[in-house]
Image 1 (cartoon, rainbow, N blue to C red):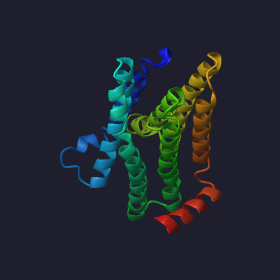
Image 2 (cartoon, rainbow, N blue to C red):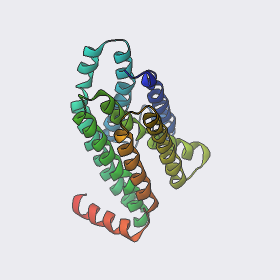
Image 3 (cartoon, rainbow, N blue to C red):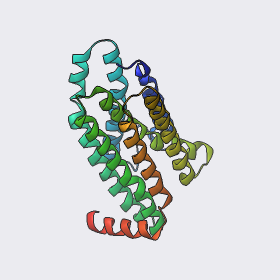
Image 4 (cartoon, rainbow, N blue to C red):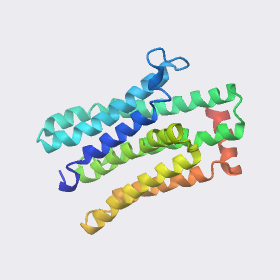
Length: 234
């Protein structure tokens, strides 16, 4: 394992804590009744937490020389990752109709579809690239790291809103920028060490596109596309 990444589990653990912090006031405090939550919400939460736990464990297994166990545990992702993509889409579908039922303005409802769609697309892309490069351990690891960075927004942006009153627009911007800075630093390090810059360049490009899409969430172009998408696939 590359020396610079021997403690990468710490980053994953911080992201996990961010998820727990962000969802404490909007989900955890409703235990055990969980009124107004569905089975889909519970399964979605469980799969995401399982994913981050796997990310924490895997580098530790490699660092301690348990490569065979690392590969065996990694096979869980063949089922878990596609399930996460499907559940992200289903949760977005559920949220769309919940917003309509609550009387949320259509413009705002379609705005949130940016988050509902970019999440599963980016996660699916990064996981697919990780699997394509599974025999290239350096690239594989970098794309798996990218899947964790997508979780910064859902956790920390929500926490900033519920604890400090920061609106969702700024919250997503802050967490998007944080993820991009992390990737930019990793990219700069790879360039400095003369490692292939391709993985982090691809990852950074995707994250930039995600944020650009968020900036145009209220534009006529996005609103029109979101209306077409919801009418066709929702």
